[in-house]
Length: 424
Ligand code: DSN
Image (cartoon, rainbow, N blue to C red; front, side, top):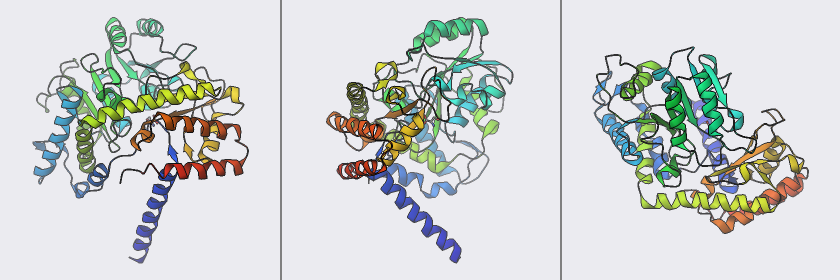
């Protein structure tokens, strides 16, 4: 028991340490954000204690009356927000959600196609060491030399390989994705088309990025990035699930049933009801008019930051951004992505090292860094603050070997950040 208390106290202290780290610096990893207190309360609630394998009204456990209401609310909000008729809110996070899409729509050995991780895709879009590139025959598309998606080249590759599933969507792509072009490619090659909008779902809701709803066959989004909810994921589609006990044929109309069966019993057991509740809270927040303002401001901040960095001689992949993120090629600054991530971290700016298109360096020490503005926007920062952020990034990169200077920058940033508290 004594030991138990020690652990509790240690974890409490570590949580406070992390709170201080986040609040005293600038979180600029574009897949991160600061969720609301209401989201965190739901996420840390008693709902974590309840098992409820199955779906509302069809559970393998008793006592699910309340969690049924929670899950129905989350599903209804997801449908309303994204304009679809089907939502599965149970995937524990993005990788298992994408796994469910593969499990539902293709068989091991089938050809699948997605954007290479090294050009802005995701590992579940067919990376050779991921399940998606191991159990399936994955074909990977890249960008053009400037980092833009090349729809003609993607079409050519699709016609050559005839994939059964195309995973579209990105994790490090700063431009608008043309869903209609991806639809043409999928139709011409006879593939199911999935859109992984994990990074941009908050922007889609805010009207800052075109929605793939009604264009693609199935949509996956995590809930904790621009959408600003708890860690989690959802799979969205049109149509309605039919008899869950009957194996459906693989058709577009049957996607809801195929997905529900893939999530459970296919891949998961009990849903995380505390997570579902927190997703519902976040979706409720995303329905409010303020959320649109937040989405707009993310993009304004991102464009302003990119423009300021360009002025300071930074080489930004594609020459700028249309969304919440940018990838900076640091080669002209004579510093690697790994060194950049470290120096910025010491200055109190958290980013992640990232490959750039046709990167001559290894993924473990690539040429670039990836950064974005969702978390800063949540804290209330605006375009004028991006000028200061660009100066700090520039100073940190210039002085990356000078720990004293970097510590000085951190103090300056901590003072500035105090005016922008985390949600509390
Ligand atoms: N890890 C996420 C990201 O940072 O983009 C993708 O899974």
